[in-house]
Image 1: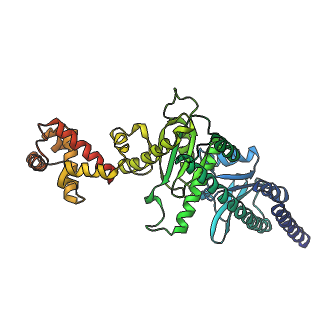
Image 2: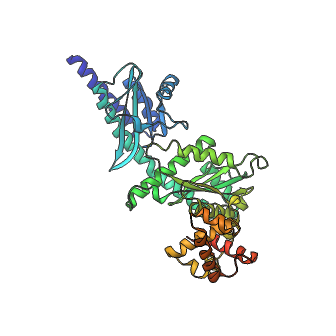
Length: 417
């Protein structure tokens, strides 16, 4: 028994020394996973805090076992939220997971699976030490990645602001970043929905952590689609340039957008937060990228206001909102709405109530009986409201041009609300 304990301690010490050497020599997470798997004779996987695989030493048989145990969602994310901290039985084996963190920041998860039975307590201690070494490596890599992402973000901003017009300069930087910009793309702007953030007023540090995790999810999903897709964190939004293989077949790039958004959404487990996406028209060349970026930003902004959170909105499908979005001066739009709607443009419960009745009347072509049924009003109550609206706005029931002006003004308020 004593000899076995000594061998176990020696193995744990050997693993710690090997991992420390790997980090000092510039090794990566894949090498750490392989070394842990070799030394402890188990299957190993490092994931993001929400379960996205970062590095792994897993056999095909183990992957099938995890899928059969419903521990992998359709997008390939490991459902870490279903794993017990003291070990989860999977088949005849056991899977343990450990938090990988530093300075109070949740960096990753270390999963270890022994297909033959429970993981020994001594190996648990060795895995905890491996998680500490991995935290050092991830912290170092994240510091490097943060600098690289800043350069990528600055370059893409210059491109969107038309400050980078030297094709040689653009090609050189795109090649250095591993991007392919010389193809038709749609620009996607993805933003976390405010209502999805934990707490009413999350700290700036927690908000940054949420945003970093969100950006990392987009980068990982995009790499799975195409290694040359730009995916950049712009602090409050993640911007990606998704390639459109066949413009004639998918003129809006819908298939690749849906694939990417679905991959990031996953099954909403692992602390995944809801987000909204705005999608531009297809930009056939780099010259159209600045305008495409504006379209995507406008689409996500209007889409969230009109459709609510967790929505994907295409600029070409905004209808009248698309035309309104092209008006360069928002103040001019607000002035138009106030001129047309008068007191109904005010931000009061009474004005909002009348605006809702006005919308129903417009939708029913001013059929008073139908509008009354839709709002569960008595017919005479609706007639009274029609009279009040016409006193405020004019002869809506008989003037189609006035109804058009009012309908447009209501759409303007939807954007401005």
